Structure formats: C-alpha cells, structure tokens
Image 1 (cartoon, rainbow, N blue to C red):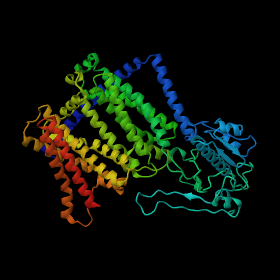
Image 2: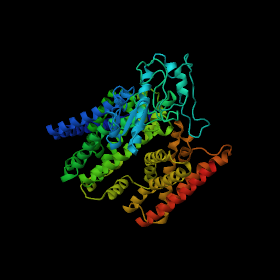
Image 3: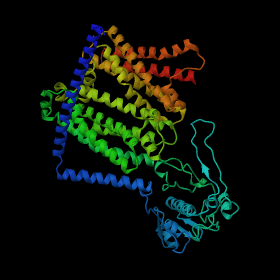
Amino acid sequence: MSGSSRTLAARFADALRKAVARLADWTRKTLRVARWEAARTAGVFDRKTAGAAFAAALLVGAFGAAALSTGGAGVALDENIYRVGIAADSPYYDAVAESPPLAARPPDEAALRDGEIDALVRGNEVEPADSERGRAAAAAYRSAVQSYNDRRMLAEENQSAAFPVVVEIRYADRGGASGGSAATDAGSDTDSSGGDSADSDQSPNAESGSGASDGTGGSAGADEPSDGEGDGALAVPDVGGSGALFGGQSSGSPADIAPPFPFGSLVLAFAFLVPVNFVVQSYGSTMLNERINRRGELLLVAPLSPTSIVAGKTLPYALAILGVTTLIAALVGGGLLSVAAVFPLALAYLAATFVGAMFARSFKELTFVTVALSVFLTTYAFVPAIFTDVTPIALISPLTLVVRDLQGAAVSAGEYAFATGSFYFGSGVLFLLGVGVYREEDLFTQRSVPLKFLDALDSRLSGKRSVAVLSALFIPFVFVAELLTVAVLFALPVQLSMPLLLASIAAVEEFAKSVHVYAGFEKNRFERSVPTAVVLGSLSAVGFFAGEKVTAVVQLVGLPELALGRAAFATSGLPGIGPAGAVGLLLAPLLLHVVTASLTAIGASRNRLLYVASLVVAVAVHTFYNLAVVVTLA
C-alpha cells in the first residue's frame, strides 16, 4: 500500500472515530435530558392528578373493550325508544324483547290511539300509530323479527336448508366491468318450505313451518312480518358477526348482505388516538413551560445543543406512547404491525405539538393549535380508513394497516412505506423547523404564530441553494395534503371532484414552493430584486420537482387506477409517444414549476399584498395546466 493510500485510510479512520465520539457524546447528553424530563414530569403528578388520569384511562379502556367485544351491538344509543304493544304469548314477543330499540308494552288499542304506544301487534300484523314515529316503530319491529329469525336459522344444523342461497361479494375497481360476483349454493333440501319462502314475496300474514312462532327452528322457513316487497329491504346489518368490527358482510344470505360501515375504524381511532392525545397534551404543556418566566434559559446556557435538548425532552413521551400503543394493540388482538403503524402517527402528533408549543404565546393559544392539529390528524387517519375493504384510498391511513393486521391480512413493505412514510418524513421536518426557533430570540418573545412560522423557515435558509432543499423537504406535507384531498373528494361525482382536486393541488404546491422564499425576503436574507427573485424561484422549482418524483410510490398501491389518483399523481405519459414526447412530458412540469415559482418569488420580493396576488395568479396558471394535462391524457 502506498503512502498516500495509508494517509487517506488514516484520515478516514480518524474522521470515523471523531464522528462516533460526537454521536456518543450527543446520545449521553440526550439521555441525561430525558432523565431530567422524566423525573420532572413524574414529580408534577400528585395523587389527584394521577387518579384522574387513571380513571380516564380506565374509561377509555372500558369503552374500547366493550365496543370491540360486541362489534357495536353494545353501543345502543336508541335503546327502548319505540313502545310496541304485544301480547306475552305472541310468537313475536321474544323478538321484541331482545331488540334494544323496542320496549314491549301490553297490547291496548286505546293506548295506540292516545299515543302511549307507537305500534300494536295483532297476530301476524303490525299496526303503527298515525305518525312518523309510529311508522318508524313498525319498521324497527319488522327488522327485529327479521334479525330474530336469522339468528334462529343460523342455529339450524342444516345450513343449506336454512340458507339455500348464499351470496359472496367481491369488490371490484371503481369503473370496472363488473361490480362483483355471486355464487349460489343450493342445499339438498331446496324443495322444502325453506326454499319456497326464501324466494317468494311475503306479506305480513305469511306463515311457514318455522320462525319466531313455534320455537323449533326445524325448517328453513321464517314466520316474519314484511313490507310486501320480499327484496330483503327489512334486513339490518349483522353487527354481531365475526367481521362486524370492520364493516358489512362479504358473504351470507341475500337479506343479510350489508355495505361496509366504518364502525371498526371509529373504534380503532378512539382506542389508539385518544390515549395518545393525553400524552401529547402533557408534552405540549412541558414544552411551553420552558418559555414561561424564562424557565428554559438554564438549558440554553448549558453545554447542550438544541437538538439534544429537544430530543431528550421528547424521548420520554415517545416511549410512553410506544408503551401505551403496544398495550392497546395487545388488548385488541393486534401484533407488531399495529404498533409499527400507529407509532408514526403518534410521532406526527408529537412533532406538530412541539412546533405548536414553539409558536404559541400562551396556554390558550397552544390549546387552539393542538386541537386544530389533532382534528386534522384524526380526520386524516379516520376518513380514508372508512374505505378499508373498498379502495386503495384507504392505504393512506395507518389505521388501515391496523385493520388489516387484526383481520390477518398481509401487508407488503411498499404498502407500509406508503401509509407511514409521509408521517416519518413530515415529523422529521416539523422537528427540524421547531428546533430552528429553539433559541433565545424566539423562545422568550411574544411574537404571533405567523411571525414565528416565518422565523422557523428563515432559520433553515443559509443561502440560495437552501431554498431548493427546503422545497424538497416540503414534499411530505404536499403529499399528505393531496392524499387527504383525494380521500375527501373520492365520493363526489368525477365531474365535480376533478376540478376541485386540480385547483386544490395547485394551491398546495404553489404555497409550498413560495412560502419559504417569502420568509427569506421578509427577513432581508436576500436582495429584493427581480433577478434574485427569478433565481430563487427557479431553485425552488428544481428542488420541488426533484422531490416530487417520490410520489411514484403511489404506483405500489394502485392509486393511479382511480380517476382522481391518475389526475393527482400521474407519472407516465401517453402510450406510444416516443422518446422525444416522453422527454417533453418530463420537462413540462419542471417548466411550469419554474414559471409559477418565479412569479410568486417576484411578488414576495415586493410586499405581502403582491405576494398573495402573485400566488393567486400562479395557482390559476397551475390549475389550467393540470386541466389541460388531464384532458390530454384522458
């Protein structure tokens, strides 16, 4: 080995040793701050506070356990709201007595006329009171009898006779050639009364060999009142089945098929996110305490870097959230995937709360900021998870991974990265911005939230090239905003949702490309001239364009198969356009970004009013470009 090679290797080894030593020193200081924070937080909780927190935790756990164990049947907000007059010896009495919305009362025609009861059962007929409430009571009665008979037939040993027709639902892509498939399985006893009653129109007076009346459950028929249509309209979702927690049934008798219902997502959002909010609120309070009466000044003068201080003060709360999430996952039957799915969402809560605590001037302002952030993140996690069994849209929510984990479904590495990647990167950027204002000139001053936001952006600008870097770092937030927009507009008609989507995308992207440029001009970091503005706008456009290519990950989960997904995240051009056309389609977005970002930068170099005006113009130009691309690719 030559002397120069030995010297290069020695320099590399020396640099590596120094890096390891700095990392070890940073870790040691961070852990020391974490121990201080954990001891200080533990000392704050007196017996009353600890008791209240324990009671709240028990309440959350009891609600979640009850909801999970009953699949929603235990949440009976409509219990005993309809009074039904029915004789105790009626074959339908048990059906009424077991139905939560119904309350059995003695049959009395005078009580029906006086409004003391809402419906009266005479034999096989039900007579409602002459009111909306009465008609609703009659409908609830029919549904109760239907559900009662279904439960009886489910207990029948010969299921082919009980349910001669079985329907299996398979969800197809929106706009596909078919909406699903149905498979029928006729049992050996299809010529029995059960087969006749299953396929025939029924009236309130229809009777067959079994049902609510005889108590035998021996044949396939059902002695049930109906509305005369015989199309299963009286059926209600079976919220007690094995798949009830996560939506409607995928198979069963035609009358039992129900569309997916987001009860499971609601329970999961409550079970996981509410305890996280308790920890996050405590974290926000301790961070804001550092700014009250200059309590954090001792940490600033200590031989500690802002990153080690923030990391040390955050670590105990992150570990607490990890422990709570693990406990909840174990209680609901989840595994490591559930914990790994919820943790990045909780990390985003911590990061957003930290930034809010750095920007807020009082606990009242911090409460407003944290509530707004919590509502946004909870909406982002809950709304897409409604469509868990319907569309790839659901995969933008980490709660969808939890649902799949509890269902035993497989989740690929690409799907996990798609659902959680934005939260990991976004949390890192938020902490980076918050650390930028963890300094005396910002920590102990009473500046408004918008001004603190500009300070945070300016703290990360060290030159013109840093504008491009910051634009690329904003991609996770742009990605999250666009995904949430797709999820919100998904249910609307394409003719309405498409223009709204394109305009929203344009507004989000133009703001992300220009707000840090405006901060730089406001802090007099850059010269207020048109050439400088054009250079900064071009650099911002290039950085944003480079980071934007990360959105190709949507191909992994099939979002481009949706019309809105193709419009929001199109990454390919027209088929058969050739190399020249492909290059043109690749450079066209870059040219658009350069033009619009330069326009907003020129406005930002003047004043706030011209910046807002130029931003509106840039959004309009971007929207028209998006519309032209969608029409061309359609």
